[in-house]
Length: 407
Ligand code: PLP
Image 1 (cartoon, helix red, strand yellow):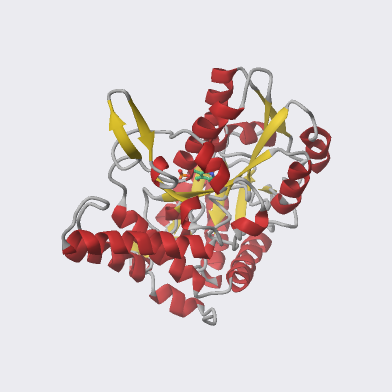
Image 2 (tube, rainbow, N blue to C red):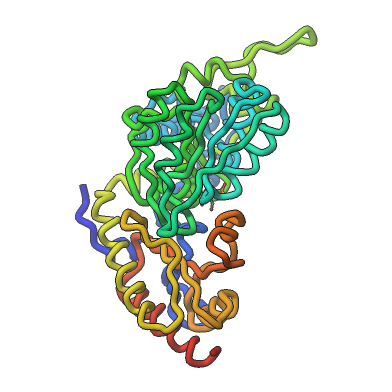
């Protein structure tokens, strides 16, 4: 394993050399998407320059190259998550992953009167697919409340998970808005005691902590490649093979079939059954490289580094009158969501942009959570492995300047 050295990491990410509004760029919108290292960019470029061909179809050498690269990537990803290749499905991202799970598994296993637990801190991607499916089958959604510090109401989960009507729980491993790290291992253990299906939205956890799918014991886990230094338009669903084999496909078309006739069609086995049409081969190859990239480091080192930056930013911003952090639980990722009394988050973000600093503002695709927080938007600085102490200091300095001017 490589020793974590932030300067070396920075040199792997070419975009970090660019300026934002003519100033050295401080990129603190990593929860929205991450930047890409050379190895990922090069792999995609190399694929299109040297190996581009459709997969699963050609018998010529070029097609074999593409096929080998594509399969190698699935292998790298499945090994990283300690899961078989059969259980590793390529999708477009966490959104498509959750839709696949809700539509393929949910529709078949939920019936009228059943209940699905989600939480108040979910991204819309883990709310809307369940609403659509529950409406279709006549099931109901139960929402686990958030406590004032931004943690989940564990007592509520314990009080509801055992209920006969509850069939499934789908929750995020880490809140994209609050940074809260949910005790998913504990919740999975409890849910499994009662035979419930567990779906984990890993969109925010994969960039910050290692997941061993087999050990974790959930039924499905999904994430997006672009948040973990990989390309956009590619993500993964990990699912238990037995469940995948019993599930009907979510989309139909080429590549996912065994035999097609006008009398009926039989399907290929997982993962192909869930990968209809020409796949995002370049994306998959890029994601494999991204996973190889993070595998070089200890996730503990990355997390310690990010937390140091988070603490610097938080301590500095706490000196501002009217600063309020949203999500203060101890066990949280390096995500700093905040509001400042008297200043709209959008105005603040525009001011920071002019200083070269990229943060996110808005509801972060968590409108129900915003309602709970009693705000329409927060400003969010989210840290990644290539951020520096100087980035945090510049954020603090710029926010203080913004307050002195905008108030
Ligand atoms: N879940 C969480 C927790 C997220 O933060 C996001 C994206 O911000 C998603 C799901 C959806 O990811 P994507 O838009 O890449 O499909």
